[in-house]
Length: 116
Image (cartoon, rainbow, N blue to C red; front, side, top):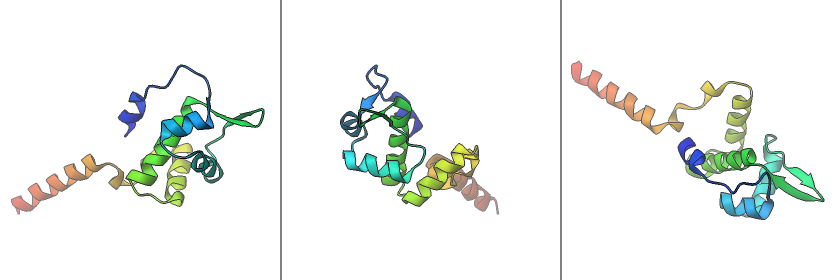
């Protein structure tokens, strides 16, 4: 997932309006407004009553969307992960979020079982 985020090419702008951001993320603007209320890490810049998002916030939105839609986390689960990351506890991420690690563990367990 992180590779996909870094491959995302955004226009060379400092800030993006909510409509532009919703098209980039692939969700409706009301979803972004809802995520603002649920995740305190999302802090748009407000100018003349408009929400403006920077590139870091867009990457955060993509991460939130990935965890909610692809990894099937709940809002509370995503909130906990983001809080843990903010607190420097990135190693608390659940193991099942990395399928390649699970496959490696499974293969090692199979090999150990054959040795018995």
